[in-house]
Image 1 (tube, rainbow, N blue to C red):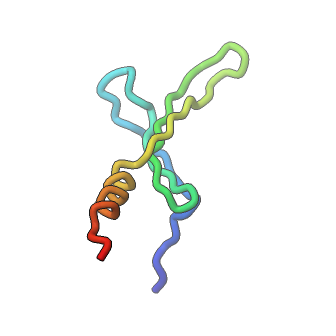
Image 2: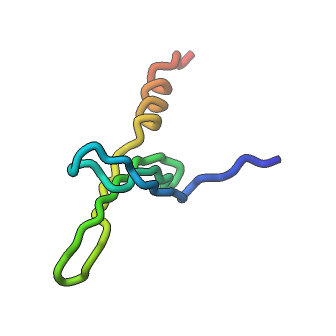
Length: 75
């Protein structure tokens, strides 16, 4: 059985918000083999109506993988 390939794929899920500043949706996306965190807020504009405002940040898991790789003994 082959492992599922998540490269260049992602998903957003409804976020249980504790305050209004938190995103309405959260999730992850993989771009070119690098994992990122996604956050989305539902906003409303007079011109276009409802839309998503997005934020992308490096995944903490990806950052930890890079830290571990840099700490490994090169010999």
